[in-house]
Length: 145
Image (cartoon, rainbow, N blue to C red; front, top):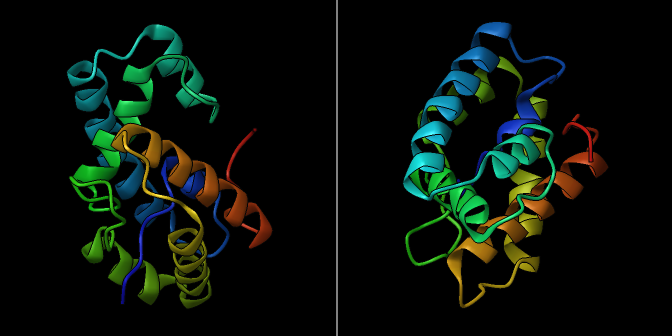
């Protein structure tokens, strides 16, 4: 099934998922995010905004989102939507099938509505925004706006 992980914020407080699974994903995303922030020259302001689940200030901040999503197979190098971290998603399905189904619904919704922009960093930002909005509608705590 084509699914994607909705971004860091979605897993901050998800009812039903085990703390172990949430922490596993958060650690993975944090490690990748730090590498991507350095690689993409994200500013301190970008990093602070991302940690608050807000829009990054610079293009480097948006590219940090792309880089992180690409390493998690949420988005492909050409800017199209990927299948997500299948190993983690399999664990999530076993842990909380309702949450897994919500992820599937969010994936389908965003896949249909997010246009592939000429700049793949903008596509990643728009995908993150869509996932956050769709997550809220699905009853998933996606952090502060």
